[in-house]
Length: 578
Image (cartoon, rainbow, N blue to C red; front, side, top):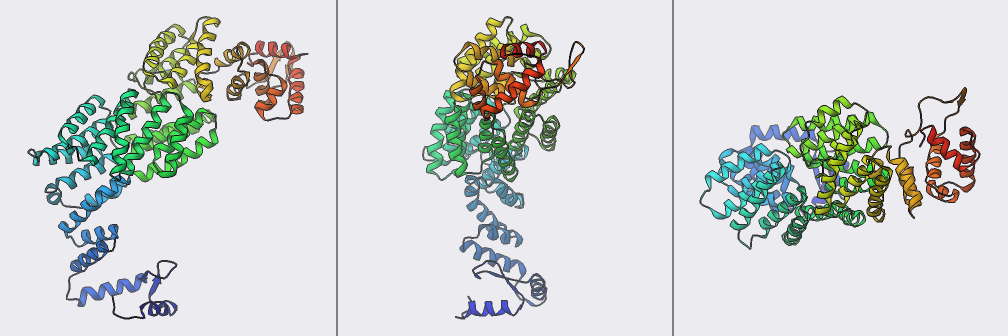
């Protein structure tokens, strides 16, 4: 640009002489002035230049635009208050930002544009509304859409775009029936060749159907959305379509196919929901360290996305994970963070209800039945905090069981089981059947429900669902291990129960003799012993040597004053250890 042929050599010479310039990259292609020197030059420019500073910013904006630097081009246009240029640039870049999931950047640009500029550019205003919705600013988005609709009542395509955006807004606010109606309205208004908007409408329709548990309709809409988003380069839309297709697999209990689909997505996108769902699957398999690793990734990417609903969802599941890690304080802290985020901005009602549901679960876990009763009374039907069975209202069942109201729990579960069977919600069905086993009035009925749940769960490796049914599940699982051919699988579930279950905080007393407490490892061996596992099976299950298992058994017999396996199990049951 200077007309010299030795520009690079001159720049490197100036750098070596420390003459006010600094390299910005390892290849020495880009340089900047030292900040103090740059301030001096700006001061001199304002005093002596015949060209206005705004004009220079505008020229800089055009240079950055022509050389492919979008962020700098917009920044200089805004600084120059060249609003027509700025609006043109933002409109040019906005669709790409939305497709890449960079909604927060788009919002930060649009919020600096004058109202008059936005009001005369309906397409830019609609993209701005999308950015606001994707960063959970729903009220502001609705105001923008109202303005566009008032100013463009006679334009069919604009009306279709507004309907498509309003459909997403309704979905985000939990108004699923309205969302479905608006989606069909948008599809009737949008021309067939408008794959961008039609793909988004199909995507949002699929997500809405998933949120109400209509899996067949969800799959149909999402399968239409995926190729449309791929054809138009909408990587964010394509990743969301793939994500919710994976979620339909999850709701159906097909955990391994869901994991495979999500793992592939995780290599292609930093979508926080992908990490969250991977965490949920590893949690179900009781792989808690892996679950936490994915949750931390989900938390980081949700914060970067600016989507509060995503971030709240991560904290809710982190609360569940902390319970599994026997960290009640950590569970409460995660829930408190979710509530603080909820209070900071309007969020969909369904997210509030899921947070409330998790609050009941923590109250039950801490035996705070008064709080659980008050909170449970506020729950609306078809609400569950769990990502893969949020349609069955199983938390009131857990509260009824905690109150000892087995008949009421069983009645609620009959309805949930029927609904899950009719809709193909296998994940929720397994959870409901496991609770029905706990609520059963006879041991025969309990075993019948549990065996049905285990038969559905075994091919997919479910573990935590049975643990979450509570400590009453332990003797039922031990009975199941003796009744069926799956002692290894049932033993894996039993090993996942918290170490506190079956142990006492005080020393055990038998007559006048104070007995030594069993260690956590001895309790694990004892549970598997009661489930009918052989010494070799126990060793494989707990990753111990056969000699170590025999040593634990020797200690168990000694502490329980037992001569053999049968006596040890009987004594443990008498002392309520298992």
